[in-house]
Image (cartoon, rainbow over all chains, first blue to last red; front, side):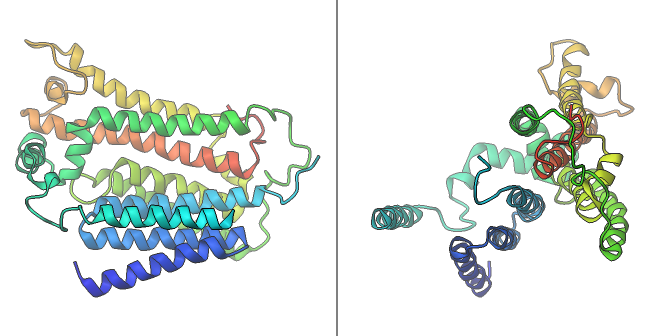
Length: 81
Length: 254
């Protein structure tokens, strides 16, 4: 475990989490959550949990971001009725 | 209201930070996770029992196979739930089929996605087949295989992806994966030589597989159940995407 590497990742994790909450655009928020997943994946790979990191990269950063974006495109600000 | 919310967040965060002091140090050999009997047994015997170097695969596919089976069922249930919410109420044909038609506005994106798909699928199959030796396995490979169809849908339109992966069959294929898993699990119970074997006790498959040791039979059976997981996960991933992207209005899903 490399301390400097960990510190950089953790600082960026907190930053991306705050940005994802603050940003008004839902599309941008889901992209930033994808970045968050990728950072967590880096952290796990670095701690030696390669299987978990692989799953996080495939599911968290890949498919769930796409699913969230697909959902964002289907939502409207106002209801139809 | 904002003040109360902020206060709740700060108090919870402080509690969690306090609780994290009790965690054992990273890679502490005396921590409960590292010092327990089971984890030592797994580390020492995984290769002897299943002839598979990747301990994670052995724990997931053999020692904790029952757990993994129901994880697969959970994924299938998630796909069915999304279908039940989105696909059930709106059964009528789509009037404006813009969602489903292949809209290739930008040829560069379309062609790049088409070129990427076979490479991703090949890598997904490699991840599945090589899970015994390297990180990966059914879940990761299945997600990547499903993602290849999602890329096709994103780049060339949902309709052209649905031509290659029928929406009517996606959830059926997902159920077939679970059936394959449970079927391999049931086989040892009916291959009786001596005492009755347990559900998912692959050692008994020695009789029908061309191997001479029970450990090799376990290794092959792990590949079999990982294939079941792969089929379920890839089908459900794509089903979740096309149901969400088309508002559940694919032509006749299921």
